[in-house]
Every structure is written in structure tokens, then in C-alpha cells.
Amino acid sequence: MSASIPGTMAPRQLLTDRLMLGLALLVALVLGMPSLKPLFATLYPGLDRPLYEAESFVRLTLDHMALVGLSSLAAVLLGGGAGIAVTRPWGREFRGLLETVATMGQTFPPVAVLALAVPVMGFGPEPALIALTLYALLPVVENTLAGLDGVSPAVLDSARGLGMGPLEMLFRVELPLAAPVILAGVRTAVIINVGTAAIASTVGAKTLGLPIIVGLNGSNQAYVIQGALIVAALAVVIDAGFDRLARWLARWSQ
Image (cartoon, rainbow, N blue to C red):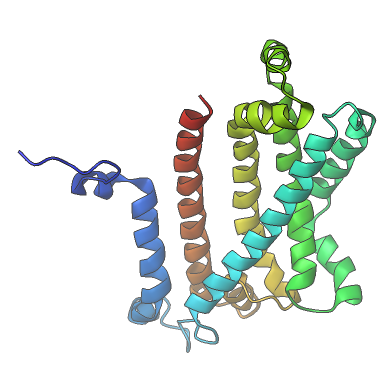
């Protein structure tokens, strides 16, 4: 009878693990898309170019992930920091303003932000970074406020009784207890950005939206499917990764 190493997965678990399956599918699509050219040629016999080959799918995926990562990080830093600030006694009067700004960022269409930013910043990833950051602010802000508001006053009183100061209470008590709720907001923001980042290709940013947009403009459904498949697989991987992180964080916070 063989003993399993702690922290490792049995082969059967690997075959049923959503994160591992998603990663395998993503890698297979990104690296193996050129080998699917005969399949797309068969499905769409009227197309002269059934496979998008203007850019490498590996490069497009890496650029897409970089744009999503940077915009999501900016949203977490701005939204999380602002959420913490307005729950402090000295910042509570600005809470309504923050919630209004975050809601406006979510409801303002990213395409409109791109249209306004391009004349100022030019074509490229910069206007897309601004649009995605604004679009991801609301879930981060809302969940930061909900998580910190949900910390029991009795727990805070106990922390004060132990002699903790405001900063020590924030980092040792409030944030650990609020972390699962905050992470849920970050998860929502990142997943939203994975899909929304595809429109960044309309302003010259290289993302997985490039084959989708080229396909739509040229009535090439094969290109649209190729880009959409990889975007969907990337979303599944990120969502599964956050799911695993949330389970670990729930155990840690307890």
C-alpha cells in the first residue's frame, strides 16, 4: 500500500481537477491551434485562410494576460486602498463619493472610455489599461467595504482590549477576516477583465481579441472561434485558480 506525499494529487484527482483540466486545455489550444488548421478548413471550406496566422497565439495570450493582470492589479490597489480608507474614522465622509465613482466606472462602457482616451494617449495598450481598470473597480470596492463592514464589533473590541493599535488591528484582524469576501470581488473583477480585454484590440493593443475582431470584420467565423476558445479557456483557468485560492484563504483566516 503506497503512501501519498502531502500536498500532492493522485493521478485520479488530476484527471478530475478543474484547474488542471483547464490548464491542459489552455496549453493545448494555444500551442496546438496550428495543428487544427485542417479541421477549420473542413468546417469552413469557403475560407481561403481558415487559421489566423498574422500573430502567434502564444504571444497574443501572453499579451492578453499581461493587460488583464496590470489592469486588475491597478483596480485592486486603487479600489482596495480606497475601500480601506473610507472605512477608517477619518475617511468615512468620502464613502458615498467612492461608491458613486466606482458605480460610474462599471456602467460607463469600456468602448466609450477607449474612444475618449485614444485622442489623448494614442493607440496601444494604455487606453485599454485605463478602461479595464475603471471597469474592474466596482466589484473590488464593493467587496472591500462589505468584507470590512462584516467584521464583528465584538472582535474589534477584543483586539483593542489586547492593546492593538489601528494599523495592527487592520492587518492582523480586519483584513484576514475580510479576505474571503475581498477575494471574491477581485475574482469577479479579473474574470470580467479577461473577457472585456478582447475589445482592446480595437485601439491597437495585441490581445486575443485580435483574431475575433479581424474575423468579424472579414466575415471569417473560424478566426472568431479560435480567439473565443482561448479566451474562454483562460477564463476557466483563472476562475478555477481563484476557487482554489479561496478555499486556502478560508482555512487560513480561520
